[in-house]
Length: 242
Image 1 (cartoon, rainbow, N blue to C red):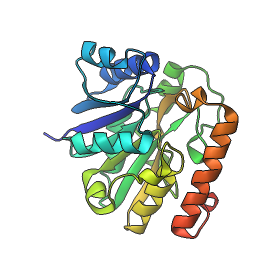
Image 2 (cartoon, rainbow, N blue to C red):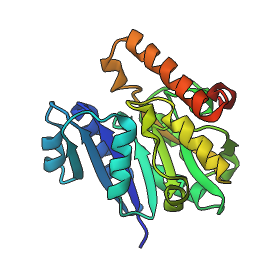
Image 3 (tube, rainbow, N blue to C red):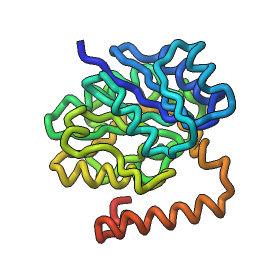
């Protein structure tokens, strides 16, 4: 039976990670495995993984988000792969609905959900009430709410294994993070695959939990540097895909 490998990069995020793992176990009916890639945390995250009996790799230092994702992809046994931020809380029917979208057409490469905290089209328009209420209202299977987009945010990427085989891993030049998801979306589209926004899925996203540990000046500087890296690599601005 096919399963989904859910890869969760983590850096000193034990409190949100615990919440994330609990929500996956509570709300996931389809076969899955969880793989936590810990980036040299000092907050007891690895002890949490042991206590939760979750597959994990403990890296000696913070390698950044793209490298952590790549570690997880190399460990993954699933036919379907998911990159999931540790600061998310998944909801009832989330993976079943996303898999339904992903497997609806051969040329769909990546699927992403709606959320309360994102840039672009994945940001919900209606006011956020609470997680259960949003999920109850939004997580009803409805293919009319699927939409092809040019860009998906990497807080929750679901994709077929053949995408990694054809497109490769995340580009670690974008370490420690930002624009590696834009780059992966662009490469997937260049390979002839569609990106789909599944509007019949809501998951909660705390938002930038790891990067909030840094000052805003450093974050803005990182955004500027990695945006330029994208432009240098492709000769186009990522802004046109927003």
